[in-house]
Length: 160
Image (cartoon, rainbow, N blue to C red):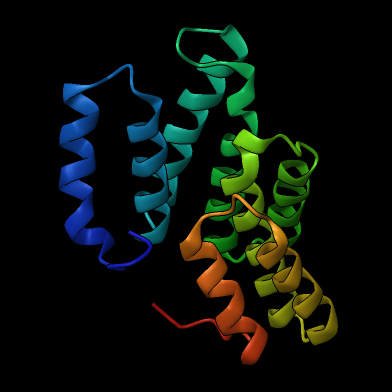
């Protein structure tokens, strides 16, 4: 999804993998992200609610440590809907967990917060967030690439 940027092609694969491996939360997160990118917000929110319900219930393998990933997913859904104030709340919650296993979610939260600030014409603050994304050592390379790109030129939303 992050490199190919073809969520419509990824969707049937994610649906199938989720059917084959229903206890693998990774496929649920991927499915939620794909649906959010396709602007299928109700379905994406349904997936997020399922994840949250399982985390709260402690349904194996859904552990409390997945909460930052859930917050990242919700932030992404809201970001894609243009609900930036609510998205910021979720991204800020991601940043509260500084554990090593949360680096991927944390770096994406920094990138998205930078993007929101670019949208709001707060370039200096946006650049600070992008720089913080680059400083997350275990952060995902796709997010770091995005951060570097938006450090050079502000993020401008595209209309879908």
